[in-house]
Image (cartoon, rainbow, N blue to C red; front, side):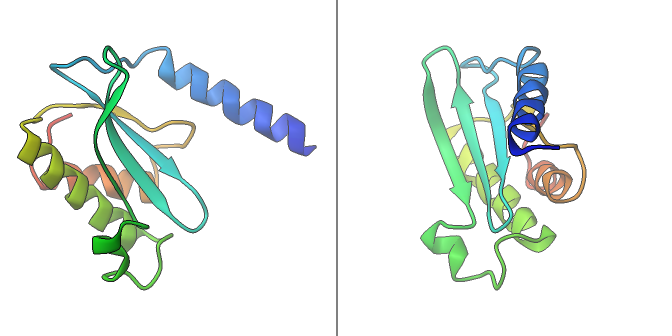
Length: 121
């Protein structure tokens, strides 16, 4: 497969997931982006078009705790951090946007850690 066809397939998967999910002020969207070296999470209100809270393995507070930003342990730490920040702002319930990734591995670890920390979805 060429690079263009891989990118097109990833975009198709992303649109397929996003057409079903929309973040409202009552229930914003928890979006996860996974790269090879890091993992990022944002809570987004799509009506206002604003990011309410965010966490990643590149954030100063989390970067010092982690040896590697691209493993399951790092995803769990980011999941706990995003849940604590969201609960601090008053967000208790979100809809989960796995983006173009399968609900497996690091994405699943982040989601389970956020649920365990008190975020409902």
